[in-house]
Amino acid sequence: MEQVKHPKFAKADATVLKILKWISYPPAIMMMIVALLATVNVITSKFFHIMVPSCNDWITYLLIPIVFMSIGHVHLDRGLVVVDFVNKHYPKWLLTIIDVISNILLIALNGFIGWRAYVLMADNFAAKAWSSTSAGKFYIWPFNFLLGTGMVIFAFTSFWCILRDIFDYHPEVMPNPAEMAKEIEEEKGGNE
View 1: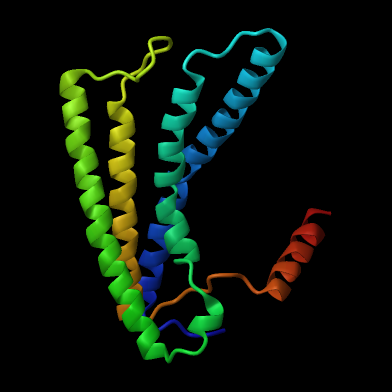
View 2: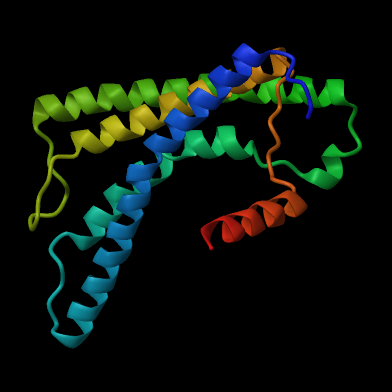
């Protein structure tokens, strides 16, 4: 078994990843709600000529927490999307520099978007702003809050990725298929 250089950081990393995983569960539930809402809307509009009030608004606004509240977990667990056939030809030190620079840019960009979302949330809260449709109206400031929080979490995960580079801690992004098969076999054997 490979020895971890910084066990305290590895433990903190596992805790952060676990918290972000829990934060991403409500968006998964919301994704099921969006699918159910869209399905019900299609069925009722086609067969009964009745549409769910503000269905498009609800789906549009629910996509905000679905995407932005789960992006932090995806970023930290799976990493940024890279072009592997290009990355394989760069030395490790250059990849680290590129990774740190891209994460610094992500911190700045996502921090700015999060801050602006909080400012918009405060404005919408003060103005008691509603959704754009008259049927099934709802306040939009909670969605501004979720957008801002998601972007702040994304900025935090970019910062955490820089810490991973500093501590030279890079957990395996994709599990080894042979190890996955072994774990599946052990689970099947343990359940019998």
